[in-house]
Image (cartoon, rainbow, N blue to C red; front, side):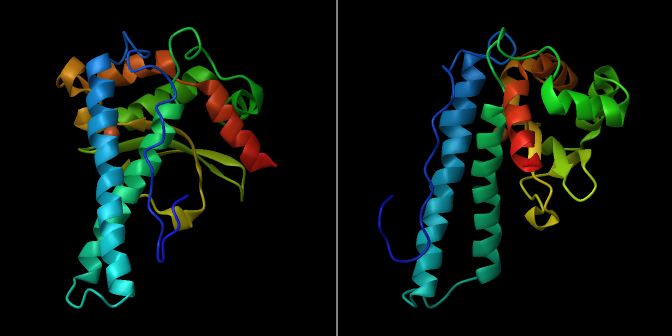
Length: 208
Ligand SMILES: [Fe+2]
């Protein structure tokens, strides 16, 4: 990593598959715009803001709005983190979809009764999420709960100590080119490419 004084910059992580790998459920054009446009944009803007913050810390920048800088930085850093999770939580057809096995599959059955009931609740949460945001499954170590939650915009309360096990992007840029205003169709298609191995890996890491 580049040695600099001050806060370090972020790098766009590689897409874990080819740009057309999620077709037919998510088109190549969407992944291109979403990854090379939006995700890259969050990383670039976060780095511009880190330059500014470093300037503030080093007292080179004298006039600034700290609330604005940090709010924008939060939005853009979280934009990078949330999208990195989102890409990994999907896999090409044949490798993704089906049902979760392992400890995640067991815990879902234990807490939701069945995978089908869990899928129904997650889908309803996703479809009821107003405006821009995310549907997520988090794990609360305190009581071993898998919580279906919705996140507005990019503002996840990381202090809540509930890491994300599974995430679905619900911003219009994630589906509009292909699904137009039929967000529920995108949510329904997404289940075919959920990377349950990755979700299980994350849960395993939290259970250690
Ligand atoms: Fe997105």
